[in-house]
Amino acid sequence: MRGNRRAGIPEFYLTRRDTLCPTARSAPLSPQSRTSLNASDPALLLEEIGDGIGVVDQGGEILWMNQRLEALSAETLRRFCDCCRDLLSELARDGADRRTHLRSFRAGDRSWEVAITPLVADTGSKAHATRAVGVLHDVSTRQRVLDRVDSIDAAGADLLALDAKIVNPLNVAERLGLIEGKIVAGLEKLFGAKEFEVRLVDKATQRLELVTSRGIAPLAPGRFMHASLEGNGISGHVACCGEPYLCIDAEADPYYLPGLEGGRSSITAPLLLHDKVVGVLNVESTQAARFDEEDLLCLELFGRYVAMALNILDMLVVERYTTNQRVSGALRDEIAAPISSIRTAVEHLKRDPDVPPQAIAELERAIASVENRVRGATGGPQTVLGVDRLDRSKGVDPEIAGRRVAVLDDEEPVRDVVANVLAEVGASVDRFSSSNEGCASIERAAAEGKPYDVIISDVRMPERNGYEVFRLAKAACPRTQVILMTGFGYDPNHSIVRSTQEGLHCFLFKPFQAQHLVDEVRKAVAEWKGERPLAEGR
Image 1 (spheres, rainbow, N blue to C red):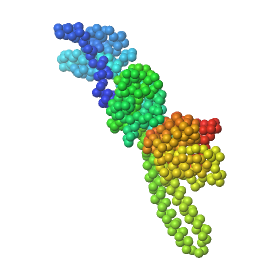
Image 2 (image 1 turned 45 degrees about the vertical axis):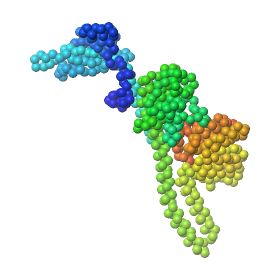
Image 3 (image 1 turned 30 degrees about the vertical axis):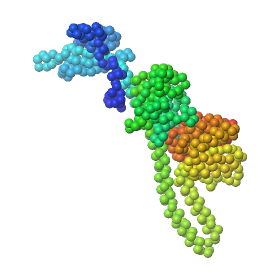
Image 4 (image 1 turned 60 degrees about the vertical axis):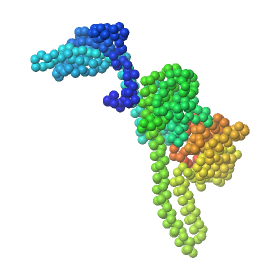
């Protein structure tokens, strides 16, 4: 967006720029001036043009100026004269014309634009100008907005600078954390704001899922916000209609719902991607009338960069997910033919009386083991790896034995394998295919004084996502440890980052190793009892 500054300003700003830059137009006429103008008084008419008007000669001397120009600072007058003189010098060298030329300058903390019209005289064969009329306009407001647009452009470019060398080694939580840090820095620099939240619209339910926030309390467990004009606060209203919203006084605003403690004002902008609302960006303040229309328009522009950055993050995760599926499918197809050939060879060996039956049985066990390992390695998030390699010689794990564990996953293969592995090492496991059913059991167990020690939940459940399960579990019993699972980092509701910030024990990327699961549950139990070693602390 650099270079042509006007081209860098979005259409929504251009259509409303006059309301932001009233000083770029001529000041309104006073009642006295209107009376004089009706009387055709040219002297008073000149007083109403721009923020000052003057006639300057080739040496940069003012030959005449109106009172408004005369009232300005000495620095402003000097820069005004310099602009007129420099233009006359250029015309003397290149040839005079009668066009109006624009020049701009800064004087102190104000920005000015001067429209200079040369007074051309025809003498002989060459036209020349020895004087010029300059009309001065204070464009400080417009320039400030343009400068803010440039700053937003720079912050947005940084937000989208997701270099592969930096991003690829990071997991999904670390990637979102990187983007969150850039959003925080941008909002603080551009708006002086530290309290904000970003929510994305769930396409299926129209729920506004919290992605990240600072300073604004999340909704209580079981409460949800939807993209709706009524009853869902300012964020729901903005997500539904797609228009930014300025809340000057929260106490008198009909849409405002308490979020920031002591919040008095806010600005909320839609996150637009290809002109579709994908979420909202909400910034709040404890100061009434902290923001204005200009802040709102700038937030809407910054929100477009936030939407693009989050979309890139999601595409990276989806690309990783789908790439693994393609590679897994190709590996299964490639391994199928040689396995079939080996099985055919074993069938021939069975008819050879010189081959011992024990050798045949060993070959068949080896083939089955290979098939199981390939199936596990290529099954993606529907599998748990290394179940056959667990050390079962020690029997029940004394640290886990008798501990209550809840497993929530709507995918039966993973739910059953996780539950069976933990039951083998001695845990008392309850399994749930419904997050609502699981959450009801979690609350009931805590109310009965028998809370779960560890809860293991998938982040992507039909009724409640992983973050909602995490928050409900912590509200029911703060000591309960929660482990979240996700396939290859796929976390459409961004549960992992929010939960990690609020005390999540850990997260597991499917497909994970069975031994890793057991180790993490053992650590979680130790943390529940307050026995986690300091060296392993977060």
